Length: 262
Image 1 (tube, helix red, strand yellow):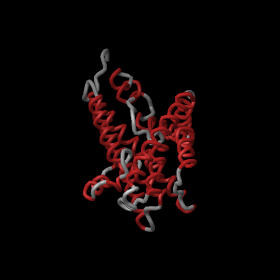
Image 2: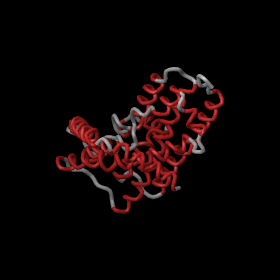
Image 3: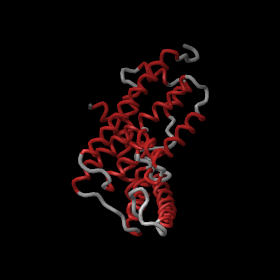
Image 4: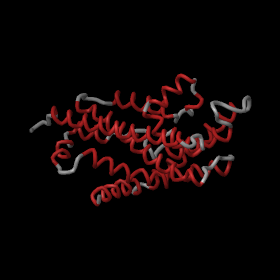
């Protein structure tokens, strides 16, 4: 555990080294938050409820999604793919530390930094302008557990599609397609409650809702009693399943890996 802790601290320090990049991200998330909030408020000018959401739920959802966007890291992680492409993965595989364990610990150090410094301020700006909904005290711990599981689910999926670099010369197509699908079905573009019933059912069965929609719905109090255990169990299932698939991909990829010169 000491090793994982030290790796996690490296993940925190890497992003803490670029405060102006964080500030630019806060500005961007805030602007997008205002745009999306007013778009959804226009919808609620003509109806009071959409899929169990009222206007206050929808606006809160927007600001939470902007706050958690970088916490769960929906975009642009290609470090494993790049290391496979340039052959650095050979060094990683020769080390006594498993690459998947390394990157997971690293990501669990990165996520709290983005939660505190990238996610907090946009939500505060939103709360100053809009009437947002806040969780009951009893739900705060459940929400934090769900958010931690969301980070692991997101990492598991990112690790899996990065592993395609073992078999493909250029993974940009796979990465773009994977990000597009995950963003749509996670609820980042639009809350899944706004989807048609059949599409909403499909989206909740996929792993992507566990990376964003589920923790936000727990914040909003959309789950009660046994259903809370059910959604947390589904998140745990997808976290373990994606990590397992990522480990399998790493093992199979390592067997066929050929690095020039060795």
